[in-house]
Image (cartoon, rainbow, N blue to C red; front, side, top):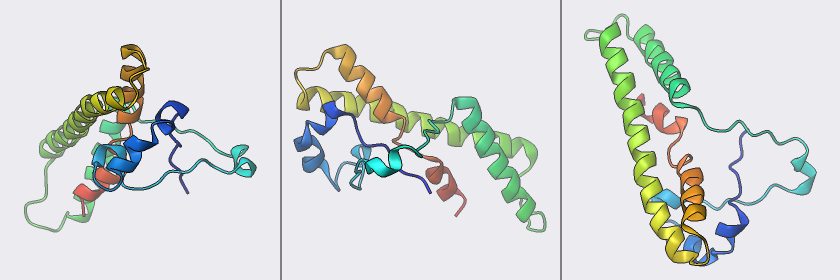
Length: 142
């Protein structure tokens, strides 16, 4: 099982931001994240986010699996088409992260005026990493 990280204290202190956008603002999430109980803290593990090369490898492998399932089907993607498709999927993931970071920077700055521009940028960059996920990649194949 996986758990999503609770947001930093800075962002949690801006509860109005999450309440106003709950269920409406995709970049801030559509679910409520709670901190892990103390009894589970000792066994949690942070896997972090995939790097660009790792993400491309994941998408490429997933496309290879799809190609294996479609060997009998007419019009199955060839190796070059799969490589191009993997790059397009990864590019779209990165574009959504960039869009999310810009959006979050503006929202965090408005909600937390006491933060410096550097702190706002760092928080937005950290939160933008989770704007898209490998589940989003999986949805491409459904």
